[in-house]
Length: 517
Image 1 (cartoon, rainbow, N blue to C red):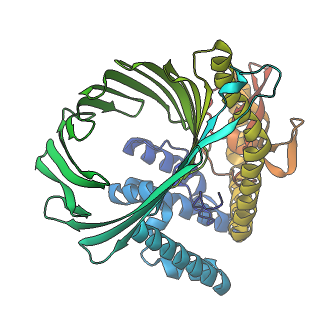
Image 2: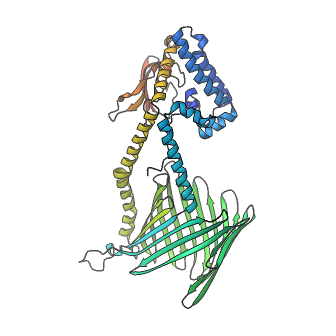
C-alpha cells in the first residue's frame, strides 16, 4: 500500500491561510485582508532597523499572496495545482531549495514512476480469482455427531493482457482455468482489435464486434461469435442500443441471440450521492425483474448497496457495503438471500485491476441463524482487521511521511518560525492598544492562547505548540501562526475574558469560531 499515496514533501505557501480567507473569497474580501495586514507590516511604519527588516519580510509575503489571489488567472492556476503551478522555471527553484543528491533522487523516482505507468498502460493487465466455499453443513448438518465439513467447491482464475502493435492495432491475450468438484477445464484466447474512425473492431477466432456512435445521445454496439464444440458450431449474436436520457440517466436495450437468448431493457441513473439501476429481462430459461440501489458516502469512502430480483426462477435479495481502503484498494461484503439459492456470504477484494472474490454458501434454505451470522461476521472481521492491521499500518506510514516532510522542509520551517516571531513582535503596539480599548468597554481580552498538538492526557506537547495570544487578540488573521507539527492533528485552545467573565474554548484546526459565544 506504499504506492497508494502520491505525497509531495515540499512545504508550499498557503495564501488563503496567510490572509485568513476562504477558498471562495471575493475580491472585496481579498482587498480588505490585504489592507489590514499592510497597515501592520508596511515598512514605513517601522523605523528601527531590525523591525524594519522584519516588516519588509512579512510585507513581501502579504504582497505576494495578494498578487496571486487578486489576479483571476494566477488564482485559477494556484487553486488547481498549487504554488508550483506559478513557477515559470521550476528547476531553477529546485536548485535553490534542494541539494544535488535530492534532485537526483527525485528525478530517478519520477522517471521510475513514469516507466511503471507506461508499462501498466501498455499491457493493461486484468485478473480475477474466484474461490467458492461450501459451508452449508455448518447450519444444516447431515450428521450432528460429526464436525461440519467446509470445503472449496470450485475455483476459477482468469488473466488478460494487451500488447499494442501499432497505434491502431492491439493484440489481447487472455486465459482462464476452472476447477469444480475435482474436474478442471481451461482455455486460452487471442484477440485482435483495430481502432476505426468512430469505434473499434475486435477479431476473436474469426468473429468480430464493434461499436458506433450514431448521435451525441445514441450509440450502438454489436458483435457475433462462433463457439466450436465437439458436436457442431454454436453461433451467437448480440447488440445493444444505448440512449442518454439526461445528464445522469442512460437507457439501453440489449438483444442476445445464442443458446440462452434474452432481451434486456435497462435504465441506469447515477449522481454524486446515489445510483440506481432497473432491468427487465425476457429470455430463456427465465424472465425476471431486478432493481438495485447504491448510496454513496463520499466523506467516509463507503458505499451501501441493496438489490432485489424476482422472476420465474424465484427471488433474490442482496445487501452489502463497499469500503475504499486506499487509493487503489477496496473491499466488499454482501449477503445474498433467495430461493432456491439459500444464503450466500460474498467477500470481494479489489486491488487496482486485480479482483479476488470469495462466495461462501452458508445454507441451501433461508435459515435465520445463517442470515444473522452472515450479516454480523463481516462487521466484526472488518473492525478487528481495521484496528489490528490497517490502522497501525496507516499510522506508521503517516509518521514516516511526516518525518520525511519535516526533514525536507527544515529550512523552511525555521523561516516560518522566524516570520511568526517577527510578526508577533511587530504586533506588540497594536496588541497593547487593542487590549486597552477592550478593557475600557468590557470587551474580549485573550488571556491565554496555545496552538499545536495534544498528548493523550489532553496537555500540549512541549515541542509541538506555540503561544498565539498576541495574534489572536489582534485578529491579525494567520500571521504569527505557523505549523509546529506538520501532518498531525492540531487544536487551538484559548481562555478569554468577556465582561470580566472567564471563558475557555478549544477548536479543531479546520473549525471556525466567532466570539463572544
